[in-house]
Image 1: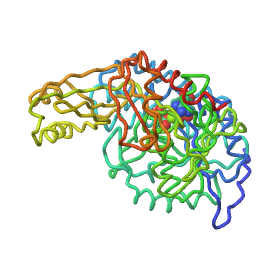
Image 2 (image 1 turned 45 degrees about the vertical axis):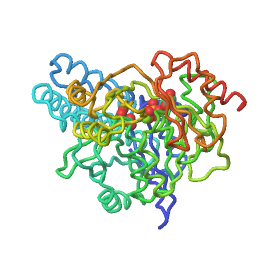
Image 3 (image 1 turned 60 degrees about the vertical axis):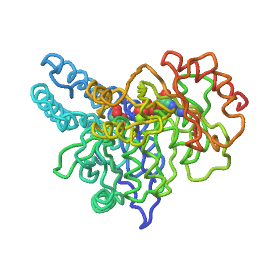
Image 4 (image 1 turned 90 degrees about the vertical axis):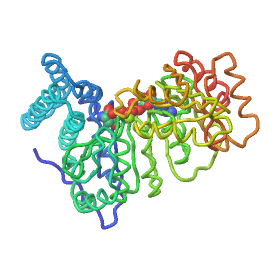
Length: 462
Ligand code: ADP
Ligand code: ASP
Ligand code: MG
């Protein structure tokens, strides 16, 4: 097949790193739409892809211990169907199918090993296959429409520690490697690489945490000093709340780094929570748009924006655990909190929110689906019980109202809480951040509370 070479770039070219999420690379038609987005704007020189929709969830199951041979085969067959359904649309099918078959065999070996001899490292190896498939396929889809797209293994540059499941990136190494190995390629080609995965100092595969491809794109942009990051997803930008919760949600044209970072931290799934950290460090604007409707606009995230409203959005994070520790010893005593936190630190548990009274402390923990982070186990609870009374509640959702100067504006608390006074509010955090006010509600009430608050806070924003 003859492939039109992308025009060489000048010495100091404008570079966009474009990231496509799982639904954007779910099937052939979706990938083709993304390929045309790349072709239309020649500043798109680096493409970061997620695994095709559903593939990582299949891999999470495969990465667990003790999965039987039949289930393993069924899962691998389901993944194969997704990937071959795309490759069969391409004229270079046979070479690509050979690569896919090689990857499937390697995956099958890793899965068999995991079933009998579980390791966290092998778990990350297994999880990495989704992005390996989609990046190889997407490079070919680009070539099929005349874009000089080439597969690049991000593990050469995305160097991390060995905290499998949530590896921390070594920024200095990433910067050196990306400048040496990736940046020079951009004069001649569009590089297609993987989000979510990296490799440790021994060259073993690592992953950055679920939804980590957004973060990968921003890290790569920072490392190669790109001018822009485009996150192409399934919605036309960042909305005032998750559009799946209410049809009243509206796309936001412009939002500051700080506000968007707060949304991501408080559960707006549209961006991985760490995405804006590299973008803020290098002041790289981030665009969020829909690969289904690339001309419908989207959201621009940047350092400063024209308007800074008190209420910008509402975020929702499900599957929260609330732990209340209580002890009369706390009254006028010092060192009690330190003891509690020593236990939590020993078990690598990261506390999310805290409120205290004279004799008790309430703490929340995040327990997202597919997470490999440390969880609050019975052993931790038993250890805390040596120090105090402990109660643990599951099935809660955290709702965060995000905006500007929320801590200093009058009437914010009453406006929010009068809307939800018939719900059981379990914990409130207000005042610590200028950008948010948040509280816990029972999981079953969460959507209704968000809808009601959204109606009140955003009803006049047609
Ligand atoms: P991708 O696979 O492209 O990374 P995700 O599923 O991770 O996409 O993120 C996109 C989804 O985020 C949307 O479909 C939407 O339901 C959800 N979402 C949650 N909060 C928001 C929000 N405030 N604005 C837009 N989308 C949101
Ligand atoms: N494929 C990974 C996941 O599903 C990473 C990503 O999509 O961002 O979590
Ligand atoms: Mg995502």
